[in-house]
Length: 130
Image (cartoon, rainbow, N blue to C red; front, side, top):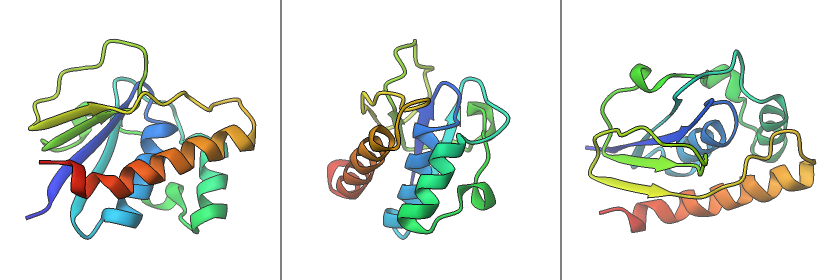
């Protein structure tokens, strides 16, 4: 049975959505991937949508939407993006914080740096979780 992982951010519009998309892409065969936030924005960050489509051919708007914590099932692993706010407590077996800066409003270069960091961390996940 696949472990369920949730990527949590305040608005569930950028970093956590990128992490969900890349988790499905690189580890979807062994992990069930979700993202959620304590609040939501009406749509996924459009720079994130464009860059993930350009870099990986993934259309996040077709497969994902902003979700609240209450919209996802119970999970085994919680990964917070580094929101600098009090992160909600979700019951889980494993928790980690990736401490990622929000690239919203920044250059494509900054966005791509965060995207590549998320990709690297996703690829390490299957070996780093208990």
